[in-house]
Amino acid sequence: MSQIPIEISLELTPNPNTLKYALNRRILAAGSQNYTTAEDAAAYSPLASKLFALEGIGGVMIGPSFVTITLLKTDKLRDLNRQVMATLKAHLESGEEICRPREPLAAGEEDAVSTRIREIIDGEIRPAVAMDGGDITFDSYRDGVAYVYLQGACSGCPSASMTLKMGIEHRLKQVVPELKSVEQI
Image 1 (cartoon, one colour):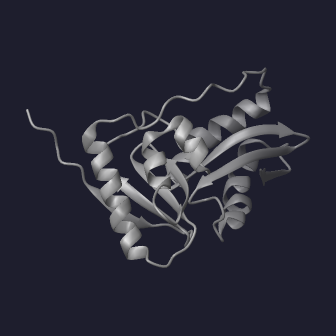
Image 2: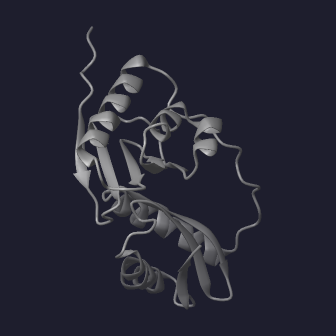
């Protein structure tokens, strides 16, 4: 039985310094893995490590069925795009490991407000943000403030603060009335 050929399509994101490469298959079961340095990528992801080896890559986020790269510079973009496409295709066709699991964060007791915030972020907001090649993860809730990480296309995006305040904060306040604000870490 033959396997369906790997298809990769380039998608622009709201962040002009980030490109999303959509794949016709799942490469992660759930969530995303974000790499901001070549050293971090070398420790956990053979695929991200190969992408960091290309000149001009400043960040790699691997999602369930896409890879987002953050550019250090946008000159020679056509050549870099070809290199990224070829690297992705070769790695995926080889069957090599995409990424190794990271050590889980220490689990602590989470209060009811944090649990509600996490449920809304994971169930509603993350899937929507992923459509643009980004990710958002909940860190903590203290004194009426929810702290989140923005990754992939969301990190450094010119419209991230508007999305955070007008979209994410607004939605969370509907479910968590005691929430005062959402802040990016």
